[in-house]
Image (tube, rainbow, N blue to C red):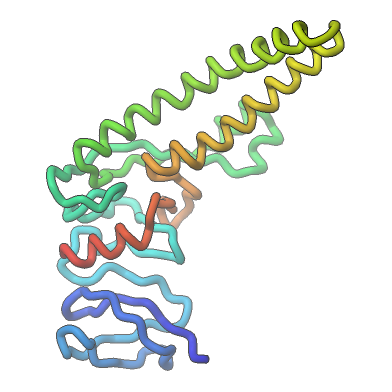
Length: 219
């Protein structure tokens, strides 16, 4: 079965899915009937002409935003809504995994930071702010609450050994809560920075296909 290439028409901006063609080939767009270039296999799907984020492009489900690029304001990057969308300045940070081997100092020294204008509706902008400040607060509160609660439960059920087990169980619940919160709460309300390199900022969106369709439709 031939591989399908997903790309944008260079004439009308609609997204097209065609069987793989030779690099540099051409095809007729089924929407506007114009002739468009077919990218080579594995090439990133660049934004079509006329969209605000001409330099931004997709690699699989990640959005790569080069330095100085602007994302389109036609739809919110979280919910895909089109009303009240504004570019909101957001800071993204990334530290390579091996930086953690050097502790906090290593992560700070090797940290990369970029500021981007992210298209957000008012509701999603508020949720982003709540998640950004609320998640760290829950982490701090949770590291105190869950171990203490576990210790109290253990003490009521047994001896000092049971209390110690309860404290460790509380820590385990806290760690699980951080992981779940990271993906189920933060991941649904913000854009997650996966990597920063020479190409730009690699972002994971809550629903990449939904946002890609909205930006293309409203171009």
